[in-house]
Image 1: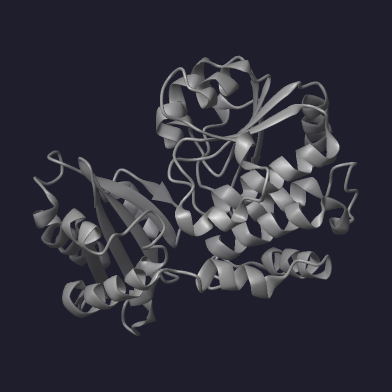
Image 2: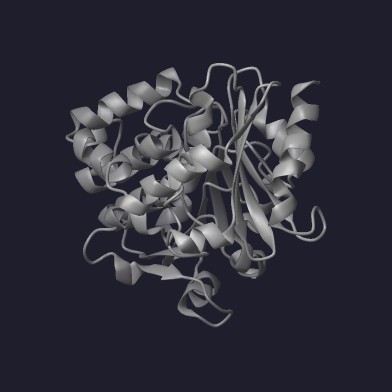
Length: 349
């Protein structure tokens, strides 16, 4: 963790202590790691500094992650909707902005302009490849780590407030961080390193209730999620001899099953349970485009596939991107053949 040193921690602490208004920003369509790291940092700062602290989201927190927000915190979580809303204003009034779980301003979509125009100092904490360091005043970037939540943990425990004693984080902060790591590793199934297990052990020793978190994260979905999954696996999933699997979810089916953001979390991982499948692609239709999620087994690069074909990127075995209508294909009806053609070519390389 080259970016975590005595000097960088001291620099961050000086920036925090000189700030009056601090905003915490994460990426569009926040996932568990985005919410876990943001809430973890929010609770750490609220506990230790006197500045005004706000979490600024480009879009709503998914319903399945709403349990992560504690009573009384909603008033400090601002969701962007226009250029004069409280979220936008908070960014423009901030003198310090933490950017969590994204490597470039464009990942915040509607907040990109505000971040570019803001004169506030900006600190990046992220685990994605190729961060745009020129946009930030201080960078904590580590790709060989499970999640931004894990990276945040190792930063916070090195601050003078914590001084290596994880219990000083407070249970609320520790639980948010643990939840973020749990979601981004799919409960230790992906991107798990020795440091990940060390962190998890230290947080459980501090009182984090892993059983409650697993229950909330993995076993609290609505019935319609399971019925949709059954339909997709039975009627929609295509597996090709080259070792690829593809599932396409269109808007009609989304409406039929009353699917909301978060309901399809983890679907992309399921085809990897098949022995000869080494890459899985899940496509979900949105307005004007389709969101693409890619997962792969070791030795097959999801990141290279996302970067080459889907206007995206990410981690070696977990990446994402998009298909743009009509630039890439005319509409969602062409997505399956389009994806299968790409997978066949890519996996034969």
